[in-house]
Length: 227
Image (cartoon, rainbow, N blue to C red; front, top):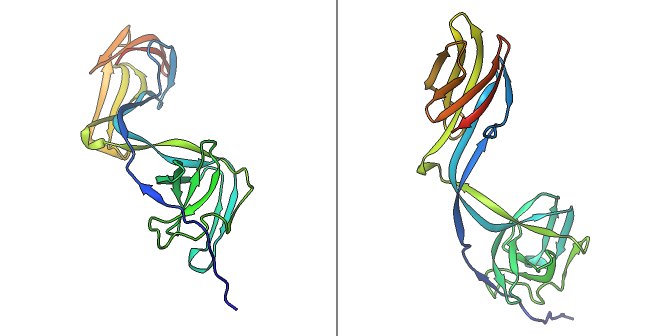
């Protein structure tokens, strides 16, 4: 005797996510705050670039298992807290849907960040009959958090460099300036040894103004005044 499956089928409306361009500025100092660098340590580390930000990802807040389906619609997803899933669009409930890795299927996430009992593909003909009726989420209160993804736009230009304290000698205060590629590989042709009088109260290099508080052969106390 043959059994027939009946029920509704969920649909998805695929779509792109709006993005915003922001400046990312990562550095090891705060302007006008006293800091100490020992010999071989960086006074200044800075990486600055533009990036595109999109709220197009959900992150699992707990371990979970999502499974079910029949034959061609079967799914077995073992998720771990911290795993991320791309948003593919919205379902007929107006909820975001996330792609299930390794399959053509997606599941809906409601406003509370939990599964909304829907499962679908991007085609009506391959979406499971009954939507989420044959699937389970364990634990049932598995929660996902909306997070922002970042895509660096390094082709628009970037800063990635450091200034290292290399000691105090008879010639004065010695520093080393080094530049890096965006991928943090050293650029051998872009480094410069710097020497300033030992009694210097301020050091000016490019856009940086560094106030010297105290200096010894082993350490340098300073403030970055301007960048």
